[in-house]
Image 1: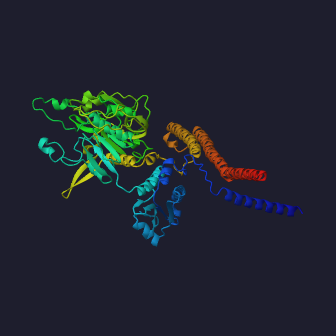
Image 2: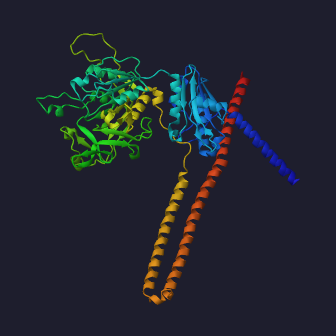
Amino acid sequence: MKNLMSATGLIVVLVLFLAFNVFTGASLSGARIDMTENGLYTLSQGTRNVLKDLKEPVTLRFYFSKGLAQQAPGLVSYAQRVQELLGEYAAESNGNLTLLVKDPEPFSDTEDEAVAYGLKGVPISGAGEMLYFGLVGTNSTDATEVIEFFQDSREEFLEYDLTRLVYNLANTKKKVVGVLTALPMDGNPMARFSNPRAAAEPWYITEYLRQSFDVRMLPATSETFDADLDVLVVVHPQGLSKRTQWQIDQYVMKGGKALVFVDPMFEEQQVPEDPSNPMAAMMAERGSELTDLLASWGVEMNKDEVAADKDLALRVQWQTGPVDYVVWWSARADKDTLAKDDLTTAEIDQINFATTGVVRKKDGATTTVTQLIQTTKSSMRVAKSKLQFGPNPPELLESFQSENAPLPIAVRISGPAKSAFPDGRPAKEDGSEEAPVESVREASNIQVVVVADVDVLTDRLWVRVQNFFGQKVAVPQADNATFVSNTVDNLAGSTDLISLRSRGRSIRPFDLVAELRKEAESSFRAQQKDLEAKLKDAETKIAELQANKDSNSALILSPEQEAEIEKFREERIKTRKELRNVKHNLEKDIQKLKTRLVLWNAVAVPLLVALIGLLVWRVRQKRMMEARTAARRN
């Protein structure tokens, strides 16, 4: 009878367990809870807005060689995250986004399809089988956007990459970039007649931008901009009229995005030479500023000082030999001078600068100012007057005194701001009358990037031109153009796209386990070092005892030697035992931690889900009872 009761009890428990799973599966089928630390599976509001604004159907084809990927477990888990995140996109799109998951098995039609779309395969086996892990997006007009292969190094920017792909499919027109400058960035064939040193060819940065954007050159005297500009790039705004500055101000106030390059000392600026005054060229003003506009955006730059960095200084050839020129420096990823969580600088290795300014957030600014590029702590501000009559790298290096604080060189500005022209458009210089124009005096969210250097755009700092069988070939030496293109591309997107930031990684190290192991290994190394020291002392003692013996009896151990050796052996056995204990305790602590993790996953999480299910059930029961009570009253 007792056995029967036990069997019946087990059956009842099993039935209740199955019933509970069915109940929770039905009641929580549409519920999603993201318990990851950085909300890896929760879409940002910017992504939600992009998906909500889809006006036409978009199809995403996710290609992943599931069978071949079993040889790379880490890749499988990352692919699962990508697929689940894509599922969230489809669920949030109100039916405008369709997700197709495909497995391009070797030599299949699906593999041919993936190759035709331009996906890149990775050899995974000795037989030459290719693993595919990419995404193809298409819209109703057959426009195509492709992620050739999901690199785990970009996992932090996975949401941005996916949202940008969807956004580009919904907005297929090439972005229009207006470049406002008086510099010959687009080339000037006539310049050679007036100044032999002037460049006739376009700057390579202009050609680089034209590969991805519709670039339009705007005169520095412009008082109106094309209505279809997606990004305004202002380069070396030297002596701009108030009306042109007002036009820039209004463009930003009305929601336009701007990338501004100012500079306290643009070294390559060509100035007219005066034969009667040889000092005129040296004394000429080579700086640019937009004091009023920068102030209205919440930042400032001192036009009389440049940034110097001893750790990042570029080495130049001088009369006395090579020397570090501290006002020419290279921002490098390995020196933590490039923002790692911003899309514009996250994957850049090096950007070269020359005589940059320092752009800081003003006191009382209403905007949010985020640093993109900065110097190291080994930096200082140098008076521009020290460079006015020519460089002296050895003297600058000798007089260098670090301020022990990084200096910001490039910043991103966002948030609420007021116009720099509260009284509206400035009047014409000739005083003539014109029709009044409505002026926007406040903006809720401006989007501007300010870089305190213009030399960063010039060819000499980032590209070398080589002759290849009669053709000029540009060979990049730094990532200056990539930074500019990334920034323009980022600003050219919607405000929702710009708002996206890096997220965490799905595969995270067990920090506590690593810390335990690190502490134990540190202790292990310390005791190992002590053992080696004792061994050396014992050998030294034996050698001393041996030296005191007659050479004829060198092979015979004295009682003192035997005692010393026996003492060493005992010490060695004792120390080795201690080392084994350290290792044992290490594994013991780690095993305890693993046990806690297993219990948490096996017991605590299911209990939490069960409690949520019961809570949902209780709420529904309460609502049903209230509905029944109300029905009876009626």
